[in-house]
Amino acid sequence: MSARTGFPAGSAACNTAAMDHLWTPWRYAYVTGADNARPKPGVPQALAGWPGEKHCVFCNMIAAVDYAVENGMPREQAEEAIYLLERGKSCFLVLNAFPYNSGHLMVVPYRHEQSLAGLTLEEADELLRMTRQAERVLQSVYQPHGQNLGLNLGKAAGAGVAEHLHLHAVPRWVADSNYMSVLAETRILPEMLDESWRRLRAALALDTLEQ
Image (cartoon, rainbow, N blue to C red):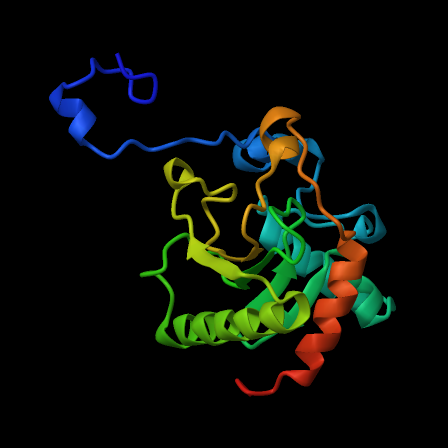
């Protein structure tokens, strides 16, 4: 019996490459939406004065920021409250509040749409352009060994907010899943979200290639 595969040694199954699995329980709240128990998902206390409710984390975030700015809050203060990094014509960049690694950000269309195929050509074009921008800035600020760039379409694919498309950009380092993540159910993040926001926002201000 092979301890790695669970099949008898010499069986046909042993000729198939086995896959190791590392369980990541620190992501459970994000994947299941357990943190969305607050009355208005995506709306921090600093923007709680917004009277609306769109029943979507991303739609709520943008609406709450716009309301705060329209009612006198400095734009940078309002955007920092949700860690909004950059606004385009049809998409925006925002830090993930449940980061896998420091610098984990998302590219999100303003329009409430769950499918990549459902985006207009203009929206899809800007989504890709802002993803390119995210890749450059993450490389410049964090010098990672690699990056994960991708979409999770539907809850079965791991989307925490399945009804509103969003693309993840995650800096990666060799062996960045250590024993603390696997055994202690604790993700070690060396940088606070506030600092990630300041560093990435400053770098984005200097990145004009996609403009």
